[in-house]
Image 1 (cartoon, one colour):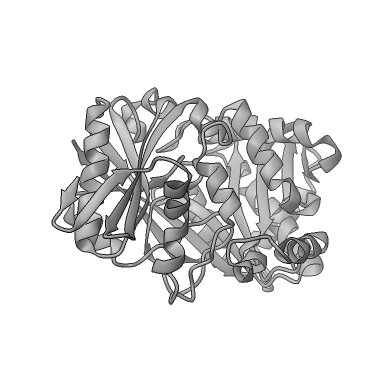
Image 2: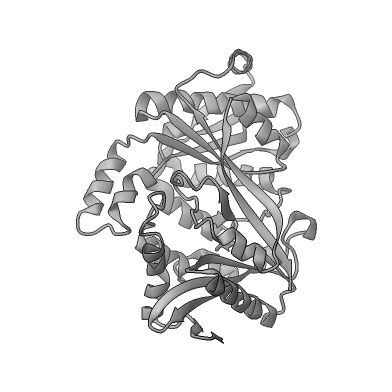
Length: 385
């Protein structure tokens, strides 16, 4: 597809893939809040056979060029598990996605979005939901507020100009995802402290650390709670066993036992909270490469991480408890246990919780109760094809 001097082609071969991966380094060269991803990880994400997402999904990547200069990129993809979800939960039959969107200017953006839509239409899709890169479990949404500070580990960052490009292409807001930040050096309000203390006096409740020596077993417990807890959430797509194993292997170096809690009620696991030290603080200066010295630097950091920020990417309470007072009590107990560990052992001063769906009343109420404030907002858009 050509637009005057603009040429858009599907990515084919190693040189194109490299150009696709490398583009953000040029576009964000002057953005102090952009954190360069590790190029090897991006390549793995994009490669069928390396990323288990492709066990149930298909994708096509596109590059925009003016002359020999790459000026934009986009992915068009279809997650076949998402097509099987109920329509009222946001995904459902006929819904394709675009993602990994970068564009030098509005003309490039419009042409790329039109190209992705054409590909999805050709595959029989009737609606687009995006940007989602690539799975809903990875980096969903376009950052529309909070460009003034860097993202934490596994969160996206993009140019503020993209909002006008996507909305200009006829997209309407479908759902907002928020992240909250809080000063974790401060104790929680007295009411929350009382709720936590009464929980610790309740013999039915146990809050325990995960046991890394039983990594696979603990991961299976967390996954079963997650699939139950999030099963009715907007945008939910089940995680496959292959994806769990892959993510577990990837996250294992930044999994610390005192930062991941499982709550048990009468001996049965009913809730969990996963917290990760902000790896971006360690990788930002590596500029996308572990070689020649980045690897050593990273290993040293992983041995005894000191992280200003702790991110809570996942938290869940089984559905049967969700509308009970017990659910928030377990959440507050896990948050407080991890807060104390993070401050004492990792030198952390800041927490980030998210992302949280804008209509997740329980989670938003918990965030409000511990005096956290919204620091970033991501928007997922939709458009009929």
